[in-house]
Amino acid sequence: MEEMRYLPDSIDSERIKSKSRLRESDCLPDFRRRKLDEKIAARMFAIRENRARHNPYDQEQRELNAIAQGDTAALEQSILEEYAGQLGTLNEEDSLRNIKNICIVVITLASRAAIRGGMSPELAFAASDIFISEMERCRYFTSVARICRGAEYWYTRVVHEIREHSYTGITPSSAGMQAGKDPFRQLIHTEITREKGQAQENEHVSRAKDYIYRNLHGKLGTEEIAEALALNPRYLSTLFHRETGMKISQYIRQEKIRLVKNMLTYSEYSYLEIAHYLGFSSQSHLGDVFRKETGMTLKEYRQMYQRKDSLPSSAGDDTL
Image (cartoon, rainbow, N blue to C red; front, side):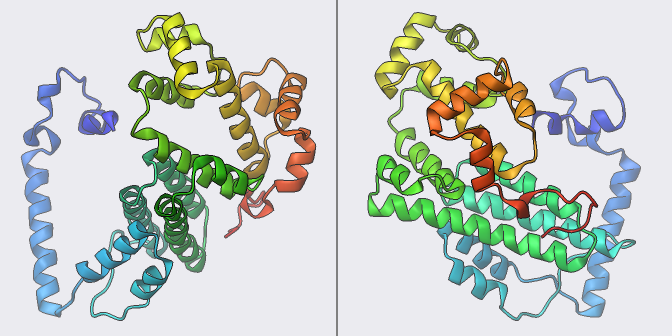
């Protein structure tokens, strides 16, 4: 979001001199601002003349509230509502581009509703990126609509799982046993663990976990993490072990293996590419660690759990 604060400067290729430059007058020149004012006024006049309306705000709120509550029945009911009004026009020249733009808005709003419902922002944002990227590859209206609505149902389903576990008192450990080797259940297990531990977790440990999460793609060690957090390595190591019951190196290995499972399930990356991406010294090193942690080889896990329907089409056709 930091880049967005200086977006006008980037577009105009001007050098950013100071943060105080970002005032309303710096965003748009007067003539552009007047043009936009005129367009907005003209659009409102046309709406009144034609007695046209946008889709009702209260219906939109019912849809988003259903996602935040994890209520798929309420979501379906709100989607099926009949109302006077129509969706906005975000691109007048290209009808497919217009519906894609609308769906980007819908997916974005759905992700924020899911966050309000208890989903971690990082998961909500990552899912939004994936759904929008998949949608951009589509060439047909029906495919775009399926992904858009599918995203809303996905967010609702995950929020439901998180809230269901929270309200029934299921512990992270029991949820982990239920998860088994199902990638979706593992995802829910991670979210429950995060939610249960977030309130009472030590601030330094939380920051260390966050740093590890954001840097899993490289080689990580206690020294580097401690330096990034401005802490003494020995102090951080002792604190982390006391709070989590595991060494920092064990936690890093656990999170890397979790990511390896996702990449084996949802991508076509080779074992060597995965090893390099996650900072393992070689493919055989990754294989040894993975087998020790899971009891399976990389090939066995991929053959058992890879989702063919989630892989990109080589021809660039719609896949959803």
